[in-house]
Length: 314
Image (cartoon, rainbow, N blue to C red):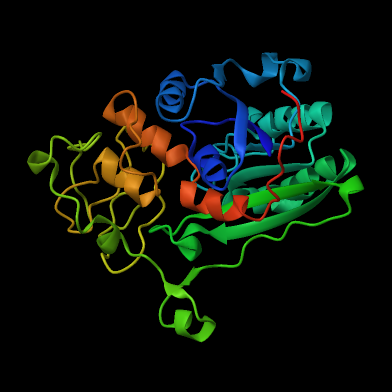
């Protein structure tokens, strides 16, 4: 299918849909370094401009719209989150584009915290808005670890199907599960962070690996996010894109707990391929990776949609 991607970032979700046989024909983001990364690895069809300034007529016709609208206002990591946070309203820009283009399908991604914001009223508002736009909408909370990503990352996906299509899209069944319950369901074991990084040499020993540099921010073991001891025999905690209130980065420890993850190692945990290069500083790389949808999770989701041929003229 021909897909328009909003809030694309470095292109994690886009990469998954491309690998499933779909085509991204137009993409948009406002973060310049992420756009440079996208162009380097995926293509030149992304533009850098505020979505609020783009009229839907300037976006090509498409079969599907996908996007992870900015989540800072919705995240449980933001202790000041509020229904009045301006960033919470950016989903309305996605809604506006969907109303203007009327694609067959849409996929909108966000953080788990959106489910409880306003005691559930925000989720119901979003569902109602998309329903009123002419779509049957389902809401799914999923853990990326259940699809082979070496990370426990819970995210919410809103999947919309245009009502006149008279069809439904079911979220994919898990391929992995926590041991020993994986045996009960006939699934693969969760992929652990230790397994995912076991063949990656130390940055000092492998300068040829792209983005294999890491923050020297002091290691701590106080139980807070970014300062917890990492169990190499479990999937990684969520890779985030935020800093703490003192300006320090929140990059988790390596599974050996001797330093923090390199940019490349964080990318591996997010299921980006080794040859996917991130443009910018270490901080730029960490931010792009933390904001991304894991490509492997997106790939599993994308396989649930039919792969049409030449349904839209671009």
